[in-house]
Length: 377
Image (cartoon, rainbow, N blue to C red; front, side, top):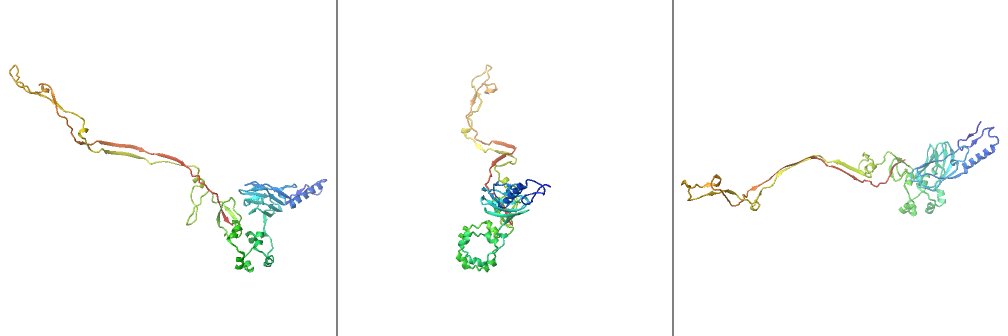
C-alpha cells in the first residue's frame, strides 16, 4: 500500500510496511513541513493587476504552507489578487505594510471568498477549507468596563497615542446606552475640546464613515478608483457614459457611448438642397444727349434750273431732278439728332438645378476622469 498525503498540510502519511530504510528521512521531511506551517516566513512578490496563486505541494516546502507571508514593496494601481489553495485548514499572518494603495488587494481561497485590505498593516486570518476569514476585533470576545476606563485614566493624549480609530469603536459596539451609562456629559466634551481642527487632523475618511454605518445601505456613490472601498459593491451596469445633472427624476438615456460621442476626430458631411435660378428684367430708360448721338448728315438729289437756254428745236429746258435724267448732283442738309428716350430689354437669365457638397473634420477629444459607481452594502 503506497503512502498518502494529509489534506491540510500535505504531509506524507506512510503506510505500514512501506518505505523500509527511509522512514527517518521521510519523518524528518514531515517535521520540516510542520515547522514551516507553524513558524515559517516567506517574502512574496506580487504582480500589479494580476493574480498570484500560492501553492501547497505534497511533501515539499511550499509558499502557501508558511505561517507568515510578507508582501514585497509594490504600488498597486488596479485590482490584484492573492489566492491560497482550496481545502486547506490553517492559520495565517499576512504582512501588508509595504503595499501602496492596499485597497486594490484581495486575499482569498482559489474558488472561495476572502477579504480586501483597507490599509497597509498586518492581518490575521484562518482558512476553513473553503474560505479565508479575516480575524478582526469584532470576531474576538472581551469588554472594557467603565471602572477600567476610570482606573486607567484615559486622557486625550492616551487616546491620540493609542490611535483608537472609528473602526475600533464600531468593533467594540459603543452604543447610545453605553455612552449614557458612562455619563459622558457636555462639560466633559467641552473640557476635551473636540474641534473641527482635531477631526481634520485625525483624518476621518470615507472608509471610517463606512465602518461607522453613517451611510444607509443601498446608497450609490461615486469613487475615483478602480475597486470599490470596503463596505461598498462596485456596480457594472453603467459603463462608458457621461453624467447629467437634473432637477427632476433621475434616469438614464442616450444612444452613443462617451468615447464614441467625444472622439479624437469627428467628420461632418452632406449635400445642400437643389434649386433652380431665374433672372429677368429690363434696363432703365435713358434719353441720349446731342453729344451722345453719333455724328451724321442727310443728302438728297439736287434740282438743276437752267433759264434762257433753248433746244435746237426751239423748246425751253424744263427743270428736272438729277435722278430723273436731268442734270445730276446732290445737296446736303444740316446735321441734327433725334433726342428721343429709349430702353434696352435684358431678356431672361436662367440656371439649371444644382447642389453643393460639404465635408469637414473637427476634434472633440475632451479630457476626462474615470469614476466608478458603488452601492453601500
